[in-house]
Length: 242
Ligand code: IPE
Ligand code: IPE
Ligand code: MG
Image 1 (cartoon, rainbow, N blue to C red):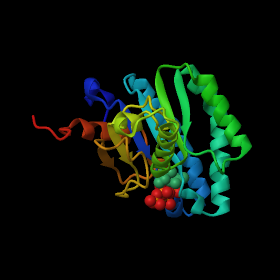
Image 2: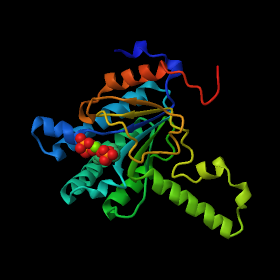
Image 3: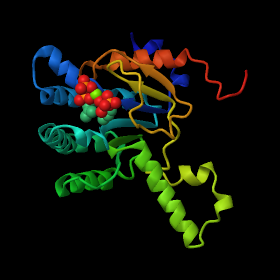
Image 4: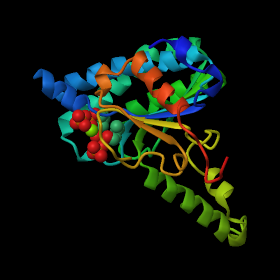
């Protein structure tokens, strides 16, 4: 399938991806899970570029490490962070040249100083870029994000800066990790799993969901365009009627 089949006026403006299936990809080939994650990093590069080149996608959110992923073996967790560090440093100049603003969202606790400082410097370097937001969710959980928003609201209320009766949906949306993100239009999950695994629960309320059987390390531009085509065939009603 080629880009020319896509309706450029009806592309999702915020795309979120649960990049799943690297372990099963590796198992199928008889290689280590870590090898699967390495291949997954190559898909990240391709998909970021494919979104950027369309020119109309405002934000791409990628689920890289969940608050629950600490339950994996230490070897796997360490390898995931080593890869994250390596690829931030390899890609940051290229992303900056492409005008991409890189943001990491998630909790800071548990992250090493090295990972934190590399994340912070890449956010700082690209903060004024306007072409696209690349939101990488690391140590991210949607429940944690909502808890953090609630804590902020409770603190403001306690200090007399916010009245409980003034709390509305915007009050919450404005206290999420990256308030300037629009709601998610399209959520893609690779590897066939039909669940949300604690990803952006607030922001996906009216997202269209596309699940593909393809494992993340095999996910390429044609799969992305296929997901866009599926999205374009959907009738988004937002609870109303046409
Ligand atoms: C997703 O692939 C990557 C991360 C969660 C970091 P998995 O590692 O979950 O792959 P499967 O689900 O075991 O195949
Ligand atoms: C979700 O995938 C997290 C990421 C892709 C980072 P998981 O593989 O961790 O989710 P479950 O355990 O299958 O729900
Ligand atoms: Mg998985």
